[in-house]
Image 1 (cartoon, rainbow, N blue to C red):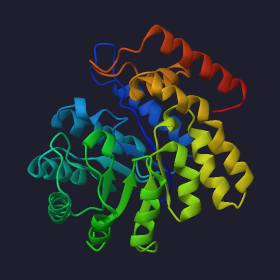
Image 2 (cartoon, rainbow, N blue to C red; image 1 turned 90 degrees about the vertical axis):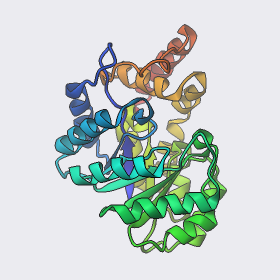
Image 3 (cartoon, rainbow, N blue to C red; image 1 turned 180 degrees about the horizontal axis):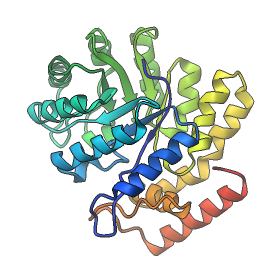
Image 4 (cartoon, one colour; image 1 turned 60 degrees about the vertical axis):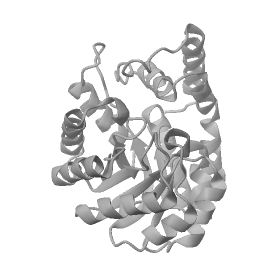
Length: 295
């Protein structure tokens, strides 16, 4: 099972949009030094959707090499077609990924039967744990609780990451799966603590790129029984979460992380054009957060 807060790490790029391996390695070390419980690479925050399969394979190997077994590494291996997903997933598994996140196929909304067939085919093709990634705002379809219930009986489908932002979806996933063998993880930073309290095993966090210590502490404090302190940590990220509405969320996260010295560079075009007003608002928010002690 996967548990704790996993950093949904951004992929570091140079100003010319080539991969910045040095900055990527440094960012991973920052995450681990802050107490992160796992790394989630090449997800939405990792901009998998603007990278070729060869680029994704290279990033995967860099991440796994740098983490070097210190924490589990989940790699985003999804694509639109089942055949391409299997190809990417096999490569990530061969590279040593501890888990493979498979996003629901996007652009052409799949039926629940098609989704189930897709996830089963990928799981059958790889010798690695599979995490179903539900993010309906980006894919146009939500993986139904009944579908997750059936998929949870596949031996190597071991978890679901829910980024719907709908807490009821998390609750239904929990109600329909065995908490002893199947992980339900929040993909929405606003719901991490509530998912834990409901019986979830953790969260996959984009805000960890900016404030890794705070995000890791939500899980640690919860596990220690310090619920009031965990609630304070959860509530403390509201201002930076509010900034995500100012433009492309990935660009907001990168601007905020770069303000803290992460050196992640820009998002790849065309998803890299925050307004001057948005940049100023992010800067002001991060300055205020740092003054409050967020790290």
